[in-house]
Structures are given as C-alpha cells and as structure tokens.
Length: 189
Image: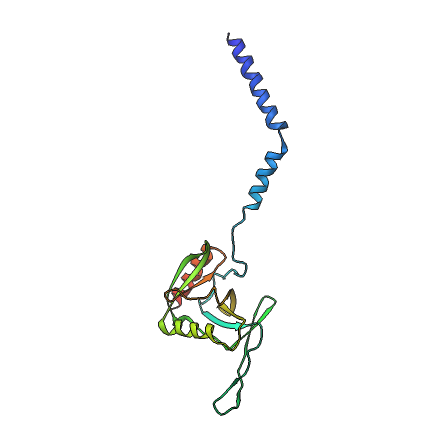
C-alpha cells in the first residue's frame, strides 16, 4: 500500500513538472506582457527637481509666440520686454517672474487626476496676479511654467493651472520628488 502511494505521488509530481516545463507559452508571455506594460503614470511635461538647491520657486506665464505690443492711452505703442525661457528644445516668451516664494502661503504634496502634484496655496495677491495673467487676452496660446533654481520642471496649460480655493497644483514626476521639492521650498522661508 505504501509503495502504491509513493509511486502515485512520484507520477503525479513528474506530470506536474512536465506541464510546467512544456506548458503553453501563451500564458507565460501574457503575464510578461502585463508586467512590462504596467509602468508608472507620469505627467509628460514634468521633470525631476534636483534635491540640492536653494528652493527659489518661480511661476511664469508665457507663450511660444511673442506677445502683441499694447497701445498706450496716447496711442503710442508700448514696448514689452520679453524674457526668454528655454525648456528642452522649446523656447517660451514671458514678461518675467509672475509669482515667487513670497506669493506662496503653504506648500504641500497632492494628487491631481491620480498623478503626483505639488500644491501651492497662494496669497490673495498671488492668486489675483495668476488669474489676471491667465485671463489676459494679449496672447491666446499661454502656458504656465514652474521653475526651481532657474530650471523649468513643469509646464501646464492655462486650463490645468486654474486655481481652486487659491491652490495651484503643479504636475510632478513622483510623489517623492514632490515631497522633496515641497521641503526645499519650505526651508527657503
């Protein structure tokens, strides 16, 4: 009786081993395809912020085209100074720094549309400045740029940069990078 049990278990284990070795390749390739397709969701326009730096955050509102000159009260054309900012291969024309650390009340880590984000609660004057710059009709193709230590790390459309309760959510690569960036800004005070 014991010999029959031992032989039965041996045959069963050999059969299962054979199925594992010579089984269908479709099931294993499907598992591999799922594993390789499961990549983290990252904002396509976010860049990594370096951990070392002095935490100088700057928000710009610009465009890839130069803004049209404005006419003054007396009919003369006012010359606008365009500040050029490069982000990768793209050049943006802005009128200079719109918001800086003084316009930020609180910095925190958040998620926007299930993606990592850096939350900036703006002062009332900072929120007003950003709203008026976004709603300005001088250039319709506006982009909001977030820069840390003179390096652009996130680019948003004006619809993505709309404030909710005075909070600007900036897309980030990872939650860890958002946390490190928030810590750098907090220590800048």
